[in-house]
Length: 316
Image (tube, rainbow, N blue to C red):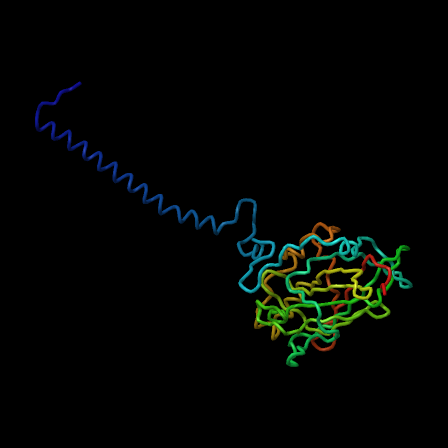
């Protein structure tokens, strides 16, 4: 151990120590500043660059963060479908029937959630574009929707279901439903109505191509019921979908263009991509619910869809 007795030497050692301490403080400060400056850069790079093993851009996942997509005020995502009753489940079949004498085969049609916007007691009418309260007519690309309803017989044949009540309802060109309090349309009945199937099991509707609303792909709701007097003997509920490319084409035209292009494709829709409510299909139920579209006169479309149920005849 070295003893320092000289006053000048003591001061020199103390000065050296102070210098070292100052240097260390400055060094630590520089390191902290450098670290703080690099952190945002690292975060920015991470947000721009895709994760390892992925070549997708940030925009490629638009609308997929939630199975229902965005849900702004006024357009809540559809609730999870409640458990179907035994009668509702019994209306479904996963079997295939044959339509005679054409020998065309049709598969059983899966059910999907009713959604929050069904309103019973709508008018019995084929043209659902008008609103009875004021005579106004919803503007849009005309759609002639033809729905054939068949019951599956024990011998495996498709029997037209006569006298079944077929309800349809959907959003207008701006994504609005009638008779919904949250959308300010209570008392309105546009784009709602029902028809009774004829001897061929057919119900026809004149409507417009449906619009979109946040959180859902473009769709039409449909419900089939049969009654024995006031007693309901069968209930089947589902939704119908349209080709993505036609959805895009229609929404480039007025009045749809005012609302903008569809916010979600079929495949991004959690209900389209999910299981059927009757438990018969585990995923991509919407693939079985695509409307067969052809061009009609002018800008109109003709849409045909076949529904096959576990029912042999209309009960009266």
